[in-house]
Image 1 (tube, rainbow over the protein chains, first blue to last red):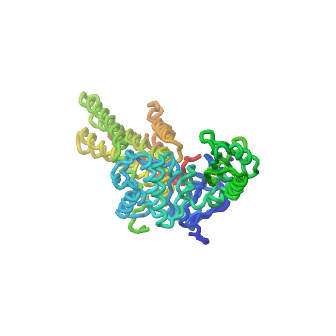
Image 2: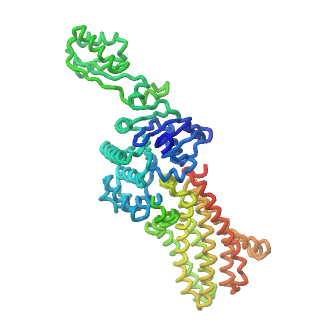
Image 3: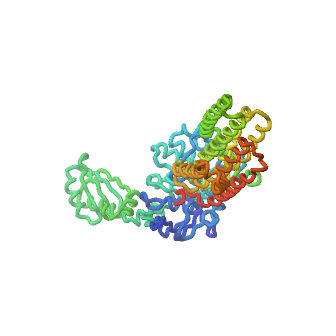
Length: 319
Length: 260
């Protein structure tokens, strides 16, 4: 780890391809044992950041340390990291065990120890029974789990996972994430997770950064990012059907309400988008009760990361 | 990390390459094609020898020349796939994020690909021994096959790896490799008059492929001694050293997107 104990310390990192700036002065840090989500639309620069931090690409500016090792010591740095690249191919003719053993040996682990570690990881990731099976027979989910197992062969201090759940069905995603979080929690590994799947990110990440056109547009905990995006929550109120029209009229006059609509399929239900979450919800309930409107039910939901993501990354014309 | 008892990373890569080549269909398929073509040429040469159209030395000489030509082509095909193939199959990035240096990666790949030519020698030996009509001819033929052939094989393997290190795709790598091989083979197509002139002799001797083939022809067909023709080994030696050095130098250019 570096001087301040960060698993990843990235300061003003830029990556250019010819005249195109893919990553523009990106700064963030990841602490040991923390899962850090790097989010962004296609082409935002997530993969370029990961490739620069894993020494696959040379950054054009800035500095970074991973596990306390600067980028100018690539072999030393790579010995301490595990990586699941975005487009990760597999040699179909090899067995899962042979594949992991080979990678273990590339990290300097002797063959026998590497085979033992490979076998243990295969069991941990639910592939123990398939250890001697050729990878060509594996489903996509099995390959993803194999890729994550491979990235853990050297017991890394920092793990980079680029779209680990891409293309998996919900059960496969759940499977990969639960294996990942349990494997990481045990070792205090710092994780950089790139994903489009915001529900996954919301579930497993301690902090996130949203990249757009190579720049970080918001960073912090999920709550911080939602707050920074200035997005309120949503609310659903059930009132007696006869009072629904009156309630809707009152709600639409309130500055705290961004949108209010009667639910056409359920009489007496009104869906409301709030400018900000909870304090406004209390004011709305007080107003309705003050107007002697009988409330039968209330459902309050905070804003989601996906709402913040869309707000922060959509261009003017797309809104 | 228990690095002391671990193998050097280039050896790990080389062993992995050898397994990949010979335990999968790839190496065996290329070797099968090589064997079929060599068998056809050996059959034709042996038939002509039986009809007294060729003497035994000539037929052995033709087989050795074919073995060198086809074997080095096979080595080139395999080595041209070594790195650009990883790039194309999306398996290169996983290798590049291990602590293995690019140089160790290239050396390991080169060692693995060299086994193609060694397998070619093993396959050709029985043909040469069976067609030679005496131990003297067999010894000369085996010497030319092993020494000249190995130097040419090593040169083209290193060339294939060097191209593969920087090529964007397998097709580009293979096409460039075969293109260079055709350029190397061009002096053998020179008109007889030109080939016998001073310029022709220099062109043939300076080119490692044509020099190797010429040595086979002179020693086995024209019954020249090896000692009198040793200068024809200079360009294969130089090519093997220079191209191997070039491949290792180009290892720093092994990148995900090729040498863009």
